Length: 126
Image: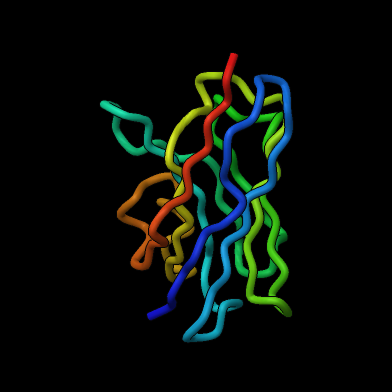
């Protein structure tokens, strides 16, 4: 099991940028694929981005492609999500998640991940 704590959320203006971080502790961070998901009020949890163990493979949800970048620093046990050109519709609670590498094929689904952070609120005001 790995413990995950997100940070970096806040209130910004539409068009602004924001970077989220997810600090991991417990088992070896580099053993896991990592993902970001988000959930807006009244909506289902949505896949945002995923990254492979060494960062060589990345995947993004259609709504964030070209604006968000996922990265990881295995030496610092930290996952990042750089968000640019934020829109009002990006407003949500953002969660980081960790899963076994064997689940890379289902990386866009919540079921691929076993451990989740508590979430951080991102609000983009238009």
